[in-house]
Length: 312
Image 1 (cartoon, rainbow, N blue to C red):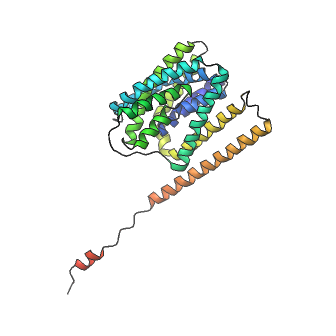
Image 2 (cartoon, rainbow, N blue to C red; image 1 turned 60 degrees about the vertical axis):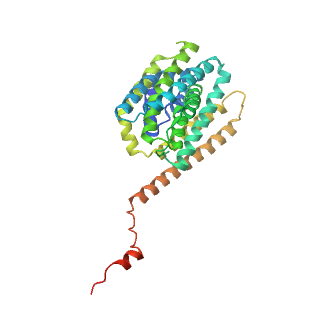
């Protein structure tokens, strides 16, 4: 029962993070499952299965609010599904000895990206521009889908970031389209894991409580997004993922790190994490103060002053 309650909290928190940042559900929940001792393939399978329901609800909600561009969804979602199926079958065929460092390494990279991206640059933003082409979206979807299955997450960090950086779609359209496309990605990934693993070893009660936590978080995610700054949340989640997966890598047999070296490494990462949180909080307060200061009206130009009629 304590494990199920913990997983419900993880599902709730992961969905809240995902709704606030447009990314983070997979890397957050997979890191938690690995910390509980789940094998990499079963952890990713569990996360993918739980996301099938939550992403269906999320995609429909974004569609109802007009946040989905279906041209983007089809062009990135279908290649993403192919990549997700390939990644799932690839991970299922690997032994745990090979899969554990692979997944922990991918999650460590993604967590480091979240930590650096949100600490130093804040919330990603995009601007309207030229149309997005298939030659850009198809490879992006393929890579994002593959990483989503092999790393237990990656669709949001890869897809959302790349689309926002392209400057060719509004932020709300990017998040809505990526969310709608993720339904195809996690469905294909789940099918790949079922082909490679079957239902053997997959704890369906874990899937259910992760899904329930995510669904419960959906109506409250807007509150979280309004009250917790996305920049601060990104630093918090990114640091948590980095520390968790660094610990996993340090515990692998081939590494054989001494207890003193492990404590020193994790303590150093903890200090970096704390510094990143403090920096994000300071930057957020500075941005709020700057936004609260009314703009100073520009003085009248010399031409206007000279042209004004003189009173007699």
